Length: 381
Image 1: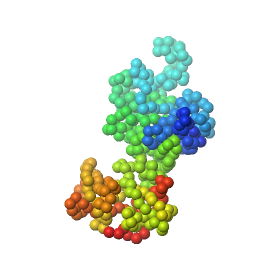
Image 2: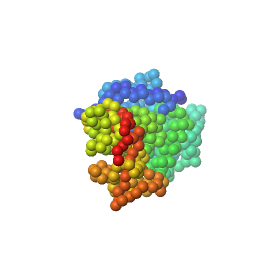
Image 3: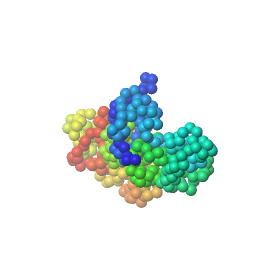
Image 4: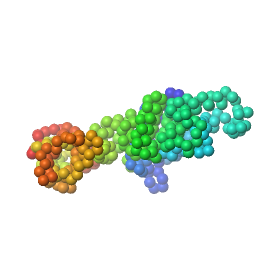
């Protein structure tokens, strides 16, 4: 089946007095891998369940391709959902688990029984189901597991079985609700690659819910970052990282978390920290407090920088993370990422001097929305 687009228009949902979704508008392209990401409680799983038909929206419409499916039952939407729990039938083999959606759709009640079905079911239909199962198993590389029961499988193998059960239906789109969260870190990294490769092979539409920003950043064509029932920003992983639209996006995206510094903008928009100008000018704010964001890789030792005290150093393979506090304001702590072995420059009594790439900073106003900046005079020593 050709991949389908999905259009979400004005979707709202409340539980009691709480508005979980506040008018979501989102267009998902055919064959796109889109991740819904955000903190727990932001509404991403509720939105996915509404798309699947498992929840009814209070307002708004859902369309798959040109067809409005808002009022349709889940079974009539031709969507496949993969859950956090694998939801496999423990008494069935892998083959039987994968075949279940096809048997439910193509066979009558009595034909689904193993012994009776062999006698009364159409042989061509049974052969088609068997071939579809084998094709899906080949794609997921689990053909050698078809005779096993779920208890005999590892976590990663069970997840692939759940994916094969979704794949066998040739759905209009795949909906995935945190499918990797039950796996250990090493297996999660492996399955991220597996899912990305599967998406490339199928060219299918994937909608993927996760609270793990690494999953979203490494697998997605686009990310919809949700917060408080709305979409904070929709864009590519690079756009969310390099140009976060709000302070919420800046805090959420990136490991380690972005460094945040309270600053002031004077009447001309010049940005200063404790009265010391930083060589930056805000283009759309003046005479107001603001927040300056700096990624850890954009901070570096510099003789003409600011005095900082080293609090701790952590080495993680090829990278070294140095946490410092500004000498003039110990409440401001910054994490600097360097390559292991890079020179920190002169260190006197645990102090060094640091600076930052002014062209890489992110400035946010009192409304927590992104403000554009321009370079001006050099950062004073």
